[in-house]
Image 1 (cartoon, one colour):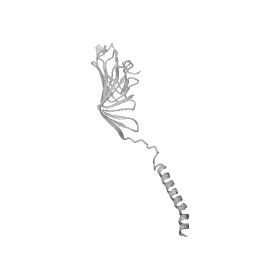
Image 2 (tube, rainbow, N blue to C red):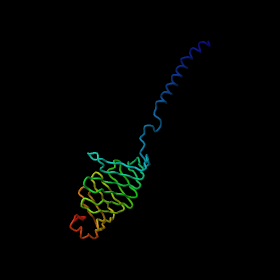
Image 3 (tube, one colour):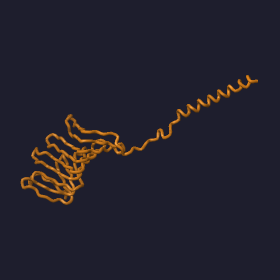
Image 4 (tube, one colour):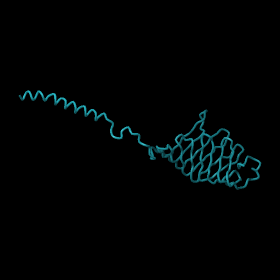
Length: 202
């Protein structure tokens, strides 16, 4: 009688064990809670750099642009980077070096747009028939692909002995044409009156 009961229980134990193993395998293979859910990116730093420097070369291998900064903090959500003491330099054969600086700045993910803030300055070295040019504002935007520097903030421009102020500015480094917008005031030195002076859109 006891042997009969023991024999009849063996299939039940085997089925229970099989069910237990099946449940364990199922739990092991099921995705965990929140696993696979795409986590939205947050505006948090994901990497840092000190004494940052990046250069863009032209087709001949010469440096065309160089961006440097005392420090860089990159954010994962918008691919923007905060810069401390940034400097953007443009090198073109046959043209003076142009340097744009600021106390702080931002650069986008592919380094095609650089914003310079607080004591922002553009300095074009003298040479190739042009005197030194300096522009000061609280914000300059460098459009690297277009080789253009612009601002919507008040700007003070000094070119040689000439001094002008305006409500905004656009400088094309390819054509070397400076456009001043809004309330434009200043004086042009007589020695430069016949040369290429800043232009005000009509």
